[in-house]
Image 1: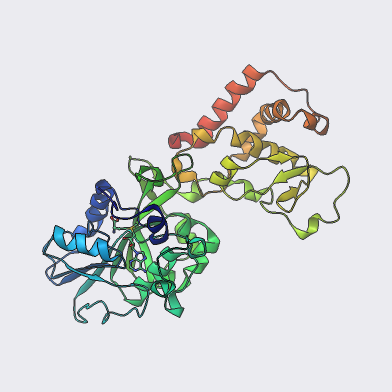
Image 2: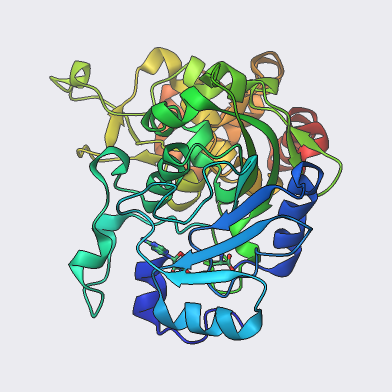
Length: 377
Ligand SMILES: C[S@@+](CC[C@H](N)C(=O)[O-])C[C@H]1O[C@@H](n2cnc3c(N)ncnc32)[C@H](O)[C@@H]1O
């Protein structure tokens, strides 16, 4: 069983959610072709060492901050060198005993990805979480990626939230990393497949395979990257147009002063947030957008979209709301009728005669079928 030696608090604090074997296998399919007799393979957050298989490489090394996990790992195999350490402190090849001459260094694993500011205060001593200044981040996962760059690994094959790459602000936080690495393959999996995860709103995780490359990659490279899914489908961000081309996602200073007859909409972050949050709201707060009434149709679109999120596969979770504007214009009547049915107070703001529910449903079915095409849940 996974991480069974830890109680709930330690699991949360250490980000200890061990990886189901089929994902370890998928990662190995990616790195196998790059392993030879001089290769060193290292996992600096190795848990019981499940990512450390033998494929004829010269050295196999596992580290973890969790002493008990390391004890168990040592019992499981004697072909790997295991040590306890805080892998984010004093990061260097020397510290990890990586031979300077090894022809190829490959990092594997599933480092923790949790927000350090939300640690549950308990036994884990503050000192254990000391992190080198140049790799510090709120998110442990980002610090781990930066640590691999410090080690100048030739290849990195790790699991991490897809949001690190596809959210532009996160991508910017990875500046030193993305200056030196290029994503060469990536398989999207759902956090819902991890035994202890929250099942209601799974988020996308990528099994990411990076190659050291001093040309690095920019955000456009990610926008046009063909992500693989476990099935045959490929997912590419730039295959879609997004609602952000038409309306703002966040409140703005321009909203003030607020006119008396204003309409309000809840802040939009990404699709997973839309799933949890409201859309049209009747009162102003710091989380509401003051609607530009010339764009009201697009807000109706997002409102209808929320009721149809179940049609999307998990990997859209951190994306903005996709839209096909030409198709939307053709079916606008249906979207607005659906919004009015759910928010009758809005009727007077639209210049249309709402149409009947059955017709709305069948047209929306067609719209979403065409929008999502091969990406239906
Ligand atoms: C998601 S688990 C992965 C375990 C294992 N590689 C697997 O996937 O089955 C993350 C691991 O990172 C370890 N960890 C967390 N912070 C660490 C740190 N600063 N240094 C080393 N290991 C750390 C945790 O103890 C935990 O075992």
